[in-house]
Each structure stands twice: as structure tokens, then as C-alpha cells.
Length: 452
Length: 170
Image 1 (tube, rainbow over the protein chains, first blue to last red):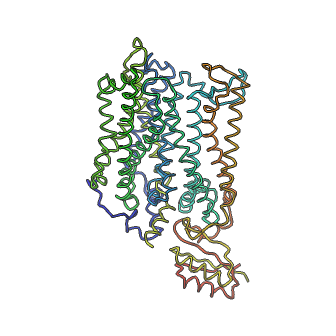
Image 2: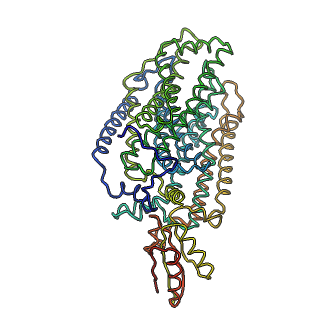
Image 3: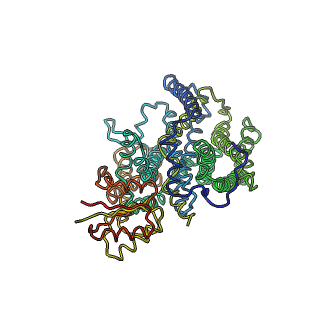
């Protein structure tokens, strides 16, 4: 991979795309013509192995119970809840990015919105596994749904767990619909160029008879924008609910009104980092250099920088409100963050979430592949550390000193996390082989406008 | 004898020029297919009812779940959780808001399918080879005309910048 992407100004596509059919060719050809390469198979094999091992760890957890995890009597929320919050954060970002950019008529969204939305679907699916695993009796997860039953029981609607159930389920299904509405015209493109009968039927069924008439385009555009307008508050509410899981409790360091917006910004932050990482890989692997240009990375790096500054301000607000309030338990949590058992992790979190994005003040670094990849990974690691430290720094030293415990994760904890990461990448690999990773119809429109 | 004049255009500009000219000549457009949602489409058929369906279904979904929540928590299963009121309406709002968004989206999908005439997998338009080029990047126009003046129609299309045109007679 070249060390530095050549800048092309503020054009969102390269001039090599001469015609609208060139756009179709650039995106659809890897799906229709080229067989998956050796690297794809290697990545698939590694991910399948990781997913299998993760599934085994989950199976052991089902058989032997949560005692296999590092959770203890004080730190009752360990890896599973941290993983859940981390994944749902990444999952929130895809739809948020896509809908925000659509509503604000940002023309560059066409290059990134499709795989960002796919990222949402897969990340939310991963996130949804953890509350079920964490239930203790996962076989009864369906008790969270309201349905008439012989026991005459109904869900406890005042519980944050029930809020999560509705938030995740509604958001996942909503995101599927949002993804599909944007995808339908491209499914028709693939239907009309698929060579084999089986693929024609597959794409033809999914395209639902799309022709591209003016009536269809108007209906699709109207619904897409309407859903985008709903998606923005929906995403904010979903991650606010995750923030309320903590803020609605009575633990030092958690009972803070800043948590919901702080979680939403964190979601956008980690989501953009993941989008940058995926964009770097697919741009190279699928030969999409003409469609994902340095200007895209420049724009995303600016957003990561802005979000990094907001994250830094949020941490400072936490410290300040604890010190200003003077509540002994809150002050103790802040002191523990910097000097306690997990201080190296806390320092690493600050380095990843606050310091690393500052590199993007330098224009040249916003389009440098190694720097982009490095900062994206640092942010993703930093955000995961933030999720786990929200739990550990509070639960390890709660209100009752006789109940203070430190936390040590087990191998099973790490294997389950690695398993979901592998499954996430595996789903992305399959997605990249079956569906267009870039929105062809939106890019055709963009190319037509840039040519004009 | 009735005929169908078909033409493909590489760009929106020539397509619009041909369209305007043919409409000015009182020609009847029987089919047009576009590779993207062109700004020139403007408002019109297809949009009606989409937002309404989203709003109505969204509100209905949210109200239905709120009603179920209140009924189950206050009457069907009045459980005292730490002395909190049975009708804890702020906590009851979260799930209905999420579900309302989903119900609204589902309502919008129904309207999309209805307005756009989707699910017609074997529509007769798929028999026209040119129509399949629209999904790849071409603007396609189909004009009904008499075989006698077909050459005039094809001439207008070619003059406007059609990259391909042909006549289909029945």
C-alpha cells in the first residue's frame, strides 16, 4: 500500500470515470467478473476459525455458566457489557453517518454510506448477542418480549434491560429497512448484468421488479429522506438509552446527565474510525480508488478530530463535576482512574481517544494511509477501553469498601470478544462478495454532476 | 400501424432535450427509465402518501405499545418495584418511541411498494432490451407513434444526442 494517497482536490471521484457506465463497471465488476482472490479466502478462513472458537467459548459459557468469565461479586458487568456498548456504538454510527450526510446533502456520502450501513447491521447483530449471553439464563431471553403467557407475567418496563431490548430490536430492523431502500436500485443493476441464472433470480427477487421509472425514483427518494429524518433521532435515542443504562443507576461516576450525549458522540467517533478502516481496505482490495478518494479521508479525519476534541471535553467534564460536587465516592473514582489498578489502561484510553486524533490537525496526515489506519485503530482500541473502564473504575470501588474487588478477564472473555470480531469481519467479507459496497446510483448522479 | 420508438442517452442533458422536444410535438411518452434520481424529475407521482404513511403508522405503533405498556404495568401485572409509581410514564416512553420509528418505517415501505409498483417481477417492460440498459447508466425513452412518422421521432431523438435508437413495430 502506498505511503501517501495522492491528493485530487475536492472532487469526490477521479476523472478516470468518464461515463455513468464506468461507475457501474467499477463497482459491479468485482462482483460479476472477478473470482475472490487468495487474500479473500485467507481472510475468510482466519475469520471462520475465529468465529468457530468464539462460538465454542459461548457454548462453554452456556453449559458451565458465567462463572467462566472474569465477572465477580463486585464487578458484575465485565466484558459482555463493555463489548455490547462498544459494538452498539459502532453499529449506531453507520446509519447515523449515512442519514446525517443524506439530510445535509453531502454529495460524498455515496462512496461510504453503503458499507457504513452494512457495518451497522453487522455490528448491531454482534451487540445484540451480549445482553442475551449476560442474562444468566439466556434460553429465556424471549421473556423480554411482551406476550400473553400462562404465568400472567409481563416485562418490567421500568428496567433498562427492557429498554435495551426494544432499542436494539427496533434499531436493527429499522436499519435493515433503511439499508434496503437505498439498495433496491443497485440490486436491479446487478440483476440486469448477472450472467448466471441463479444470480439473476437472486438479485431479481431482491430488486422486487425495480425498473427505474420516474415514479419509482420519486417514491424511493421520498422514503429514503423520510427514513433518514427518523433515523437521526432514533440513533441518538438508542445510544442515549445505552447511556441511561449507567446514568439511571446509583453508582459513583455513572449518575451523570452528560452520559447520553457523551455516548452518542462516542458512537459517532468509533463508527467513523471503523468506516475509515473499512474504506482503506476495500478501496485497495476492490480497486475503488476512483470512487473513494483522498477528499473522503480528509473529510472523515476532520470529523474524527472534532469528535476526539468533544470526547476530551467530556472526560474533563466528568472530572470537573466530580471534583466540583465534592461527593467522596465520585472523587475517589476520579482518583482511582488516574492512580488505581487500571491506570495504564486509562492512560492508553486517553492516548487513543484524545491524543491520537490530534494528528489530524496536520493536513498531510489526514490523507496518509499509515496515519489514518493507525489513528483509526487507536480510536477503536481507546473506545473499547473507555467502555470497559466505565465499568471497572466504578464497580471495583463502589460505595461499600468491604465490597471492593479488582477485575481480571479470563481466556473465555477474550475468545468471545475475538469471536464476535471475526464474525463481524466475516460478514463484511461475504457482503463485499454479494452486494455492491458503494452505492452505484448515487455515484452515477455524483459523476454526472461533477462532469457537468 | 402503431410503433414504439426507443432511444438511449448517455447523459441527462440530451435525454431532457429529447423529452422536451417530443412533448412539445405532442408525442406520447409510454416509458422512460433513468439510471439515478435526477433532480429534473421534480415533484410528482410516486411521492404521495409516503410521509403520511410513515407518520400515521409511526404514531399508531407508538401509541399501541404505550397502551400495552400502561395496561400491563398498571392493571395486568401491577408489580411494586422499589416503591416507584405503577404509572411510571417517563420510563414507559422509551420503548414506544423506538417501536414507533420502526412501525413508521414499515408503513413507508408499504407505500414505496404500492406507489412504485414493486413486486411485479415479470412486468412487460422487462421484454424491452433497452430498458435493461437504464440500470447500467443509460437514460431510456420509449415513444408511441405511427409507423409513418416514426422516422421523424427517431430523428428528434438522434438530433438531441441519442446514442442508440430503434423502432419496434407490432
